[in-house]
Length: 381
Ligand code: SAM
Ligand code: SF4
Image (cartoon, rainbow, N blue to C red; front, side, top):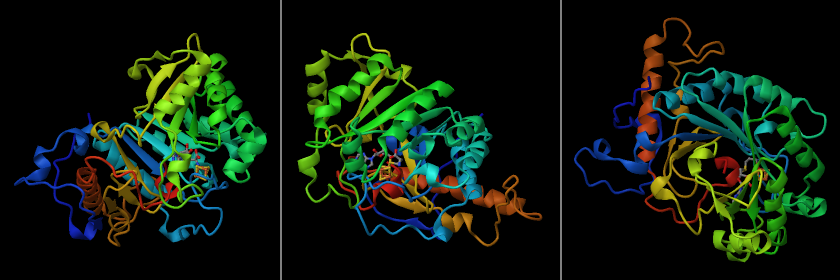
């Protein structure tokens, strides 16, 4: 059974980056926290396994001048495993691989297999642009064989030329084939992510929703979020479509949406779920801008370089690398034990990781500001 840790103060050497977003006027602040700023409320850890991407979507990255993290800064699979073990021991059950583009990380199926074996990991899914999964590549099959069962594919247009423009070079056919291969292969729940943007794919929202009439997928419409630097951040309002506007377009074409019980949808995310009348699949709305869901937020995020982030937008973060790379502790590739008689060190590392989780969750903002300094490809969406 999972035991939640007693919250403790984070030691300085754990590398806590203090971005004070929460005032805690309590003698023992952590003991009294409940709700979204309590570790007990966290269900999901989103893990960005790389900041590298093979696309440059307009809404996510600038066209040029993106600097990738040095390889030495990126967490190893063993380090990610140590963090997931600590997370699972706090009661976090759902884990999502993301990026950058997660499939751009070499040997990703090896990581999937390592994480699947961890007790307490009930759900492991991935969000991908699908480019490297389409066509005849064996990667999708290898990921499935390694234990990946749920997948979300990003697709913002059904028009190949427009898709190429939005993604700055993406091949629609490959993504479309990845979607169908995932369904044929028996992935338990296939989702499509659509960033809805004024003047860019507004006229296709009803067509994208209509995919669910025949296909047993969930199409999720995401409000554009102005994070980091991208092709749309100079004038975010010009691109922004709210949930209400997206819904209005879809309902004008297909009739009133039918509510679906959220618990019946796989995952523990913030999407509100609906369906078109008589559809095989579902629709979801992720509306962080028009309806911030900070009060019920149940997730933390891990960046490729080991920052545990409390919020997609402007919450504080804790640097886990100093904990993992402490010279007294070495993770080996077999089972994460330290070399020699390192059990004391290992326990120390686990304790410090748990303390970092407890500390990070208290940094969640009461309501996010709608801005963020870090690029989406580093945080992982
Ligand atoms: N590369 C993968 C992909 O595109 O699916 C995973 C990483 S991507 C950062 C995760 C999700 O964030 C994608 O569904 C993407 O569409 C979404 N996203 C990226 N930038 C966004 C933005 N500025 N506003 C809203 N959603 C965004
Ligand atoms: Fe790459 Fe995903 Fe960002 Fe597009 S949304 S640029 S695919 S990380």
